[in-house]
Length: 357
Ligand code: ZN
Ligand code: ZN
Image (cartoon, rainbow, N blue to C red):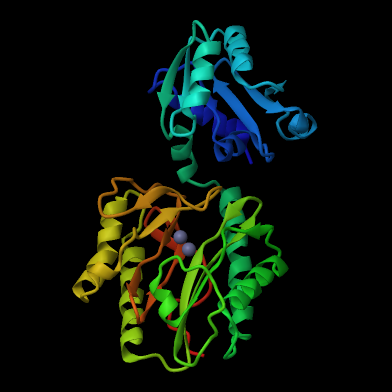
């Protein structure tokens, strides 16, 4: 990964908030800009150079992972060290990530950094992360491949009486067996009426004939996430549940068809939502259509009717409409797509049509 190029792009964008450097404290942002994979690290990036801060546990690791920045190890808080770095580099206006810094941390920075103006900056690195480079796309593809393979293996194993927790465990084992580094998030497995909850936590509900089986799961590959939902038919589904699947599938296709570089996320959301509204289930689709994904499971661009986020080439986003009917069940279909100049590439290989077991 070309961290130096990413930092150069960040520096280009610091003229807008008018700061000499940005103190990056969000860990995924630090990872993105430096390659550091530990649990505590910060970076100060500006045209006059860069400094990486961590504590003694990571002195060796950061020497290996962040060889191209000045490195500072601290033991009693970062604020004094930030001030020293600002003084050394002649930084007068220092940006900080306003949605990531606590009030207490901000106060200690203000107290330590006499003579430095602290400027709140929002989502600059996050925006850089929307468009993925080739190595990031490869990591996401591999994470999804592990999920596709786990899904296929679980389909062969579903039997009456198996519990939601057992299926969740089988999915997770399957992803690790397929080479995943870990899980994107705790898997959602919902049978029958439990599928009416968008984010159901798997329990001891046993699988019965005629249940929908909703599976929302993802794998991690070199810290990149995958995220996919499938809702399948175990035994014969009721006419209503089949209809829900038809409507959600059509809505998802409308969303996928609306994705292209330059599209506004709110328009893509509405393209899918209109299909569900027209079928009479508008009130049963209570969440946004999808989200960006990468170093975090949920990142930008975000899809909801009012979103003004413009999709760049190379963004990876989920398209995940759902309909949830209390007492009956629910259906969601979710796929990651890579935004291209003239459309998108659907990343999962698992079929999006109704699977009937
Ligand atoms: Zn999901
Ligand atoms: Zn998702």
